[in-house]
Length: 196
Ligand code: GAR
Image (cartoon, rainbow, N blue to C red; front, side, top):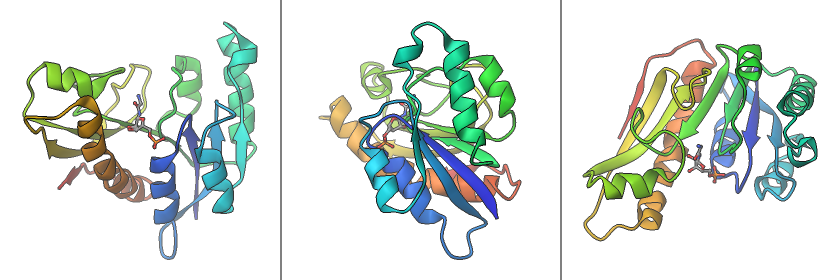
């Protein structure tokens, strides 16, 4: 059975979707939900599902990224994960951290990568006049939002969309896409998942 550590910073709806998928004959189980924000709503949801949780707050470390990431690695590795799934983890990691988990770290990003790396993805898609939007799951490499794409899901952009309405249409697709990619990934299958 593979062990999956899930990294969050907020509400954790993708974390819940991942954790709920890892049941029965699934080849993996969640071993840890870790947040860099102590108030992240996802922590209580993980606890309610019986998943061990941890908080490594980046704030006390100030600009000392190395010390923060050292604490992060220690907290993660204490649970011996095979795979690290970033699910709304809103803190940029250094190449040193990423190298430590090379080949076994995934991230979900709310755009059709390679479009709109970084923040405000839905607003940027609307501003560009795109007719479709979506989300991507990719392997994490040291290029921000730039690793190999392992899955994408598309939704239409509607004429009266705001960034919020578009985000609300993309999020349920994230909840389908990420578990589908994770299931393949933990079995060593990197075939791209395309939804719908
Ligand atoms: C999700 O929409 C995810 O794609 C996005 O944050 C949200 C987290 O929601 N991630 C990024 O923007 C990463 N740069 P959740 O906490 O409910 O899963």
